[in-house]
Image (tube, rainbow, N blue to C red):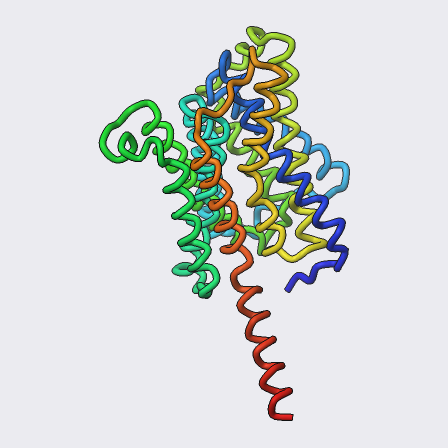
Length: 322
């Protein structure tokens, strides 16, 4: 079992860096999507990130061996490739229809779906704290969509289609997450991501139109490059954070990502109003976003919080008996 290094401050900084990079990512993608289609944007992101990982692993002589996979591993790899490819494309399709903040908030459903799936597949425990966090998160979503609940529940508008598309992206990501969790018993995280990134890019090649990059403005070109590097750097910071800090606390920190997006959109819409539009939501929706983040963090920290409460109760009981 992996034990963190104990350098929690370093782990916290890396987790915050990951949250920042993931938080500003949809703003950059939104600008690039004005010219390029979702499949081509995804193809570029995966090709660049996968190629850089390939170069690193080749230089370190750590390229993965496929023979240990076997038939079961091959099926898991295929599931991970299909799940991540669909997730990336559907996320961008949804982002085309929604604002960056709304998209980033709805995709928070993905880790919750992974948690629920793990209960049945890996027989993991679901604590009272996690159940409470899930209820808080659902309440937050209700507050966030307060202005458009009727629209979401009664008609298939562009907004509803966008929300459903991002929810579909979260759903297929669950298959990727479950498959990757098993693949990590055979390969390192860097090896898994290199193979998946390049395989996903190869899968999308027939539908990608790389020459669309020539239609980008200089600003959009730099933003596309930033999106490609974001995929690599954010994941690297995330993996390194897990090496120095508990996974539950890293996950709780990453729950801040939607708030980073909302703050970034507010600042960017002020500084660059020609490129970034402000979020069209009221104060109740903003409060709902905060509640969603709190619920997500509580769900991540649920097991450790309950264990801490039980330990404190046991110490009090022992002190009383003494």
